[in-house]
Image 1 (spheres, rainbow, N blue to C red):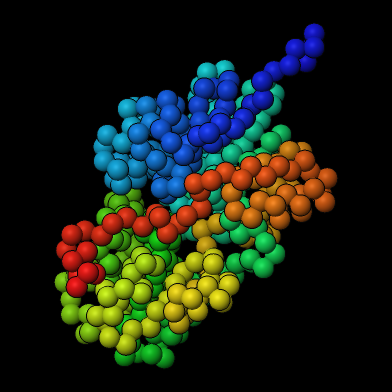
Image 2: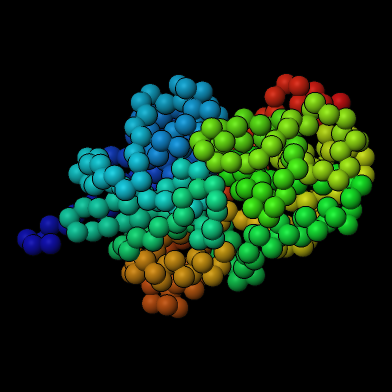
Length: 353
């Protein structure tokens, strides 16, 4: 700039996480703040208690569903593509492809543009808007699966494995562990796309969010609460549940059930064995190694910040490409297990019993 004046950086770090000084807002803060922009509804990114929250209408609705209508002081809905002035910066939200309502946050000031990806994926997903690439000067990315071993297969191929297993083990219920927000609905939609039209049974912890997706116009087919049925009579049926339910008494009541788990971590067979999963389904709502690297290149960003996950590996690769990459080592993100809501009382009693 002229006159030797140095502007404050477009983004910085505070104890609460990423902060835009010129806009006066945090992005996915880890504690309550005055003004928060939230990328999506998972609990490691969307926390209650902020004075003001800006997010997509879908994310705000999910936060209200999970935390109650008074989850923040004031909610500001921002639709995809709309530009809003916040302080001295222009802000717009574009799809991240992670789950319903997920968004990247695009911040612009005086010809400079930063993009904060939040969690994202590049694979197709019938339950949310697809990832939209935005070129920028600074790209802030996740790195959950930022190791070369993580290369996610086509999710429809994994669903085909599930349906084939159901044919082979026709007398055994198939319990499919999937995170309650985003993954569960994507798995359901993929099963329907594969032509499976029988009822699918839901653990109580899945019911509210699946109903919300359907109310949002995303068809998931016939879904029935498993608590209304004799579990040992569900041989040959598909039952969706939180991953934590696969190894507790709730699952034992199905008798000789076959367990599956839909997660990018199922690429690591040791993880499947540790959880006692018979049928690992490599289905992830995060970008894999190839898509992380491709996205960084396609943004054209000369600077990259990596928030959480395998930061060091991704930064090392970026530097070999001549990109100024910085690991942020942010804490409080990436614990998807913590995103499982508590089951309703009736389901909790069944689990404990």
